[in-house]
Image (tube, rainbow, N blue to C red; front, side, top):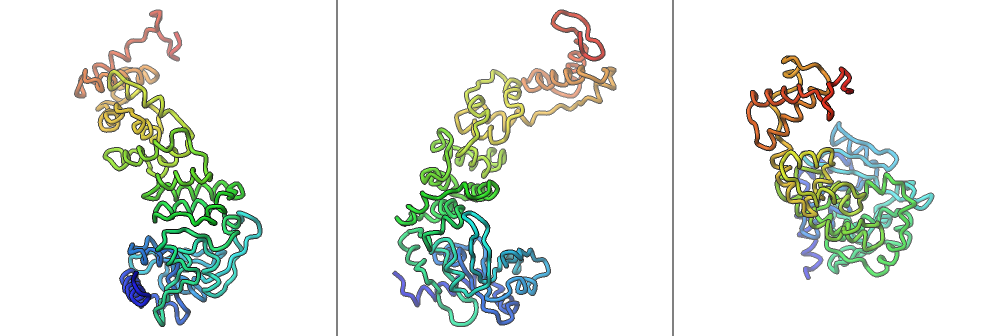
Length: 386
């Protein structure tokens, strides 16, 4: 295992590479102690590029952000600010303690030292800091680096999931992304988590983050295995199938991946089973079958075996007419159901390869529009009623 000195040298170089405009950040701090914290340090220790930069300030984080850029998003309640450093997005936070007035409630925050700030975090692997000024030294009071090396995800205290139950869903996200296993005591605490004490909006937001992960299939499966969510029937097989399908053209552009993954994991079930088992005999029948289907239903139906949907997505759904209702009205068709009937028939025959070109479309549409009889052959009144 690399020595501590080697790790700190490598980490210092990685931090400098990750924050090329570090001098600007130090200048904006105006002497306030600055630390790279949490996931950014964790990812650099793992040799990964950090997904975002979290910087803790022992002082006024908002003031530092304003000195960096004019464009600042402030969250006064939590003493945080979002801005940019060059081309990079950066989150600045005043070091703080958190207290929870009730399980699942949003925290009440107060300024404090870095040590107490690290102690209020979710997992040991995120309770790590690196000073951006002064002597370079990994600050790891809760042995997060050792847990990383052991592949463990460990909470910092026994009330962690009581204070903020969404941390349980976050655990699934980190475990899937980083390949970590729950430390045994953490596993016991997690399985007792009551997500019902958190608002539906916060649960939904955390689930969407989980479904947005590259390892979303594994993360959602873990959440189900841990009893945090109730999976839909067949989710274990459907999730990887949907994930693989969305990685292929043209399906990657059909639906939002996070939303499709969530429906695959949790439901609710829609028309996907019906579409998956359908066998349209011609393109127009397929288009009629798929009419009104949500994008997620199309993706799930294809993942469940509806191979005909490849043709629907690649070709059929993009077929349009060169004519429109104004062409029929100009040719003497009165406004009303006859116009729609004519266009529908022209599109049906174009989809099935029976006609092509504007002239044929108009001829077929006019013929269909002029067929004013009902099943018993009586003419339609102006309101379409025989």
